[in-house]
Image (cartoon, rainbow, N blue to C red; front, side, top):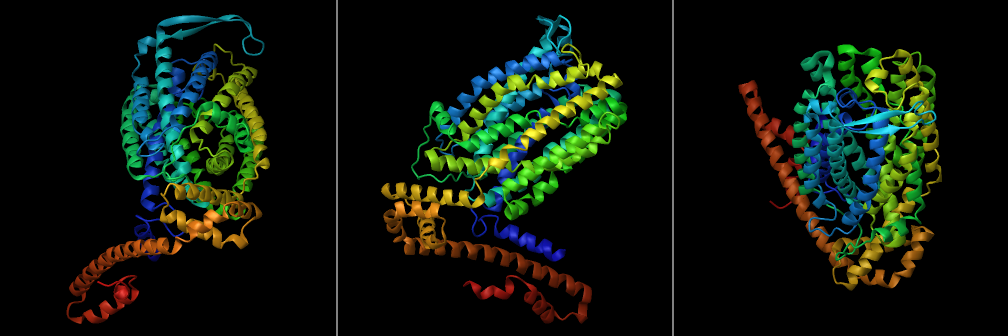
Length: 620
């Protein structure tokens, strides 16, 4: 174990400033990007506790949400999304900032959204009783058995405005971070590795705070716990500060590596992007997956804690179970890259989706009578959701395919056009949750916090909510069976992009040594290449061979730079080892005194040293 820790230390130190062979990203940059994900993780705390959701204590008890309020405000939010998404797409896809295409949007949107979210629990309680206006509700089959009025209070409206500001600008930050994730490397396996690291470590702030918050809430406010705004007034400012510094770290220490000509200038119209994506089948497969997963929701551990268990015990378990269920993601996040490399991302995500559906079936059978047992099914489902995160890597691969197909980088358009489509579809699928809850006896005007205290209604809600999730799970299992962009095909597409970029750089006299070496390696591997890649090499053979003539000089420069880098790393490690040796010698002298054989001790240490024994490797 000690040797593994030592090996890990030296590996971390060796690749801290430079990437491992065959990869593009250093460990320092991975750590910085993970910190950036930590910034969104801090913001996920806001999303976990404030929003238009039936499972959130503050929203149900303090803002007195009903299914009708959630539905109507959800529709208004959808219309805002339809306006916001094209605007975000044009801004992101036409960004040409000096620091990169996406990095300029990491900081200020994070600040605006964090402040908006933080203000929500500070809305005065008295505003919840001031009715701003009423909306008449006619008789709606299944949803509303009798005519009634839906009341919108000043408190709810102010909350909704702040929520929309928070959602809008946090999505800006998340899209920018997602763009960096998609361009931080062009190596698909390295993307999976980085995805595993940031998915595991980047979510620590969210996991820790969401665990601690309910426990502290019970300690501070007793049974009222997380129903009281005071606890959020304490935690939300902490999250805002954490989000800012994490985003700043990502801004300062990450790089974008889209395979583009050196002097490329991004200029894409949203209409142009829509036309391009309309012909991309992988885009539509992801859309279908997004639609079905929008109602593939079977996790209601909050209801179990708040209403089935209840009291202070339920409040404490709210946090503990949240952490335990979060741990379920870890196996897939940690071992996922090895699995994806062994069987491919498509097979992994298909298997995960089918397993989720199986667990939903079991949950449906037990949730009425034994809702606590359903927690085990929810835990198993979360394990498969950890596998599902690889969909972000598959999206990155599909964006490279889109660049190959249309010549456009469309990270912003992909996300925002998806949002537009999913929002429009969501106007209809959003009715599904209140519809299925109406089967359980929950009306549009019923307050969740009141109606769920009836055990029979709650039992029915468990069943019908799980049934809806099961339908979504079965449908979500279908799209990836039609996904044929495997790892080998993607690698060939990236090579073609390198050829195109190098051709442009050659014309503009901006070729880099990396361009030249990449083209030479592509030519050298011609005989073992696929017919697809051979075709593209043959089309540009004259250009490739012209670039390859520059290889000896480029390789010499790169080797010289690598030698200097290796030398500096070696000398740095050597200094650490020599200092360690002197400390060990001093300690041994004090302990053994006259019996100490310093020469033998030094010889033994040097023989086991990674660096001192090779001291002559570099001229000192």
